[in-house]
Length: 67
Image (tube, rainbow, N blue to C red):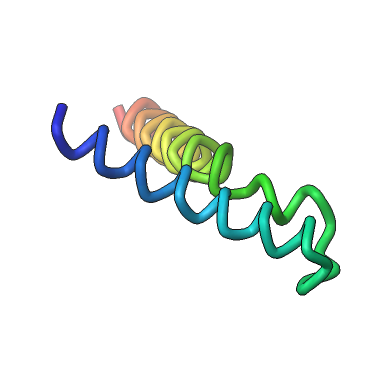
């Protein structure tokens, strides 16, 4: 639980830094890149889960064909 709070705090802090830099016109990044700290970790976790499910499915198909 404590690690989740730290992770959220870091992501929010990075987002706020990017937001301030964008509003001060120090960086000219797209708004997508500014908001990546907010949703990027979720996308990463979902991608890892999807790859895991696909690999497990392939392994099960190979095992089923061998029997």
